[in-house]
Each structure stands twice: as structure tokens, then as C-alpha cells.
Length: 97
View 1 (cartoon, rainbow, N blue to C red):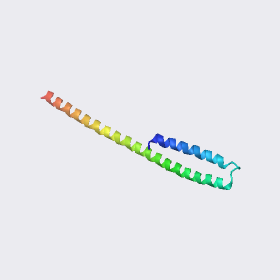
View 2 (view 1 turned 30 degrees about the vertical axis):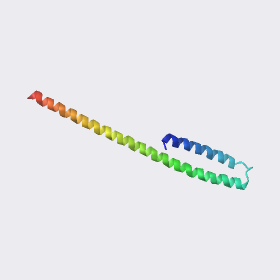
View 3 (view 1 turned 180 degrees about the vertical axis):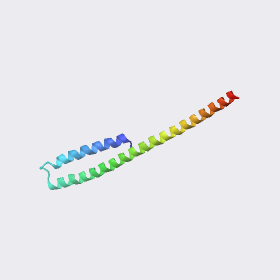
């Protein structure tokens, strides 16, 4: 699941939690209906917590990916610099001889 999809899911879950909480506050609901809403709320809260964990993992993996790619770029640049530096030294030695 992509980060944006996770955020959309979290947003939708929060909207449903709010909607259900508003319904629970209505005094016209009987006890059975209130219990059903309460169980649904528990389920939605569990889902919300799960999605929050997924988002945290996604953010960590993105950070790791960026670190990995930054490390790779640095290694490539060091190799390129090393090659250029050696070439420059060889040219300098040839000129001095």
C-alpha cells in the first residue's frame, strides 16, 4: 500500500469514527444499537491503529531508501573523483618527465 493510500484510508476511518460518535450521542438509539456502534468503533479504532503503524513503517522504509540511494550516489562520486584524480596525476607525471 502506498503512503498516499494509507493517508486516504486513515482519513476515511477518522470520518467514520466521527460519524459513529455523533450517532452514539443521539439519545434516540436503543441499547442494542449503541452496543453495535460501540463494537464498530472498537473495530475502526483497531484499524486506525494498524494503518498508523503501516504509515510509520512506510516512512521508515522511504527514509532508508533515500539513505541507501544517497550512499550509492556518494560511492559513485568518490569512484569518479578517484579516477579523475588518478588521471590528473598521470598527466602531471608525464608532463614533468
